[in-house]
Image (tube, rainbow, N blue to C red; front, side, top):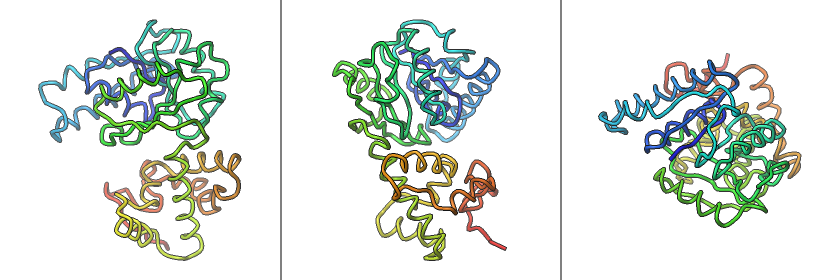
Length: 288
């Protein structure tokens, strides 16, 4: 299988890792060749870590790393790939521009990893929207075995069958969702996360106690505030802001979320959010 990932951020690296580990040839595209090469090095690092942890056979490590290469622009991709998946920031105009350029390379399947933007909206401008679908992966992609597959109004049954085969190739499971902003996972997850932030803002309980209640009481793998730290509170803010324009006040970001993002408290990637991640493991914040 030959695929390309457009966007070398956290999700792009994770998607490239998963495909390479499962035997696909992967081109990673970013704004220029140097940035794409940096992303490829991060993919190699994640593959080495997987090998060290016994998640990837040591004998397959070098082959997996060699299956990933950098490309400086979408226009430089070879034609006729099995899949091109776009995974840039949640900006509809930017995504549409990239998707139109990617479609010109004539992939069998074109997909977006968007977590909240309507697939029908992103299909605007495509010549063959029947070959386009949403493929929403979850961070970390190498550990979470779900792909939320989004069916647009024009997405064909052949495309859905091809996407299902790709998901099976990755040894993952799919949940097929009809197009709507936020789909299923972001719509539900962000709503819970936003309400948990409101509870902290209102002094209902500490982040740790809210998370403990959801983890033990509802058997969530982790609480919504720790999950927000892992996803990135800036990402939470962007998605909630977008969904608020569609669904109204119940998704309106709390002022606490806005102020934390403005202060650079983005969660794990910045070292601090609702938890202190600077030691490598999440610890309660000690407010002054």
